[in-house]
Image (cartoon, rainbow, N blue to C red; front, side, top):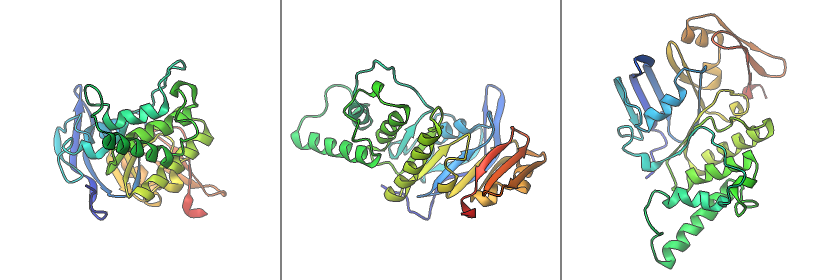
Length: 275
């Protein structure tokens, strides 16, 4: 069941999480519209991955409320596709890419797949469909350990999509990829968002490859979080308020946004609205 396009897929109010006696974030107010491509940004340690785990119900709130697809966190995980932080496959692994995708469909079940030609044919059609959606048909029948990092990431995205989720959570999916593959995967995720009407929440450290495709940005910092369009959030005033320290956002002549100051070294952001 899809969430209505004008509802919020994720809604947090005065939410807080503590882990090991440390407050990861607090006073978190966040509204993520359904059917949009949203990036979660922020420095290391800001709690980006913790937010994803909280959405999945794996980390409980210590204060406040959080609604995910109109329900409590964890209640609708069957409607959520999840790709955790990058994991590599051993080069000698002989499992085919198509088999990795199929695991997303019935890998949580014990024993042999359910019998019946019709059921098996439907499953195969769905696996083939998502492999086509991520443009992995040329190598899906090869051992997954033999394909490139970017190709492996497409296979894993297909695995997360195979159950037709209403929401896709991607935790640092561009990590360890080279720049061409980062751009290709970012464009792919954007296309899936539009074609499937799916909410996509992507945790990212470097926003450069994905900024041209984003609808919204959620920026986590010491002052909570700010959510809005990229041009609303990535500004000197907004980031300075969020981190309670002077941060300057400069506009380069080629349309890039250059973020200078704490809490990290300078970051370079492409401004899609300049083109």
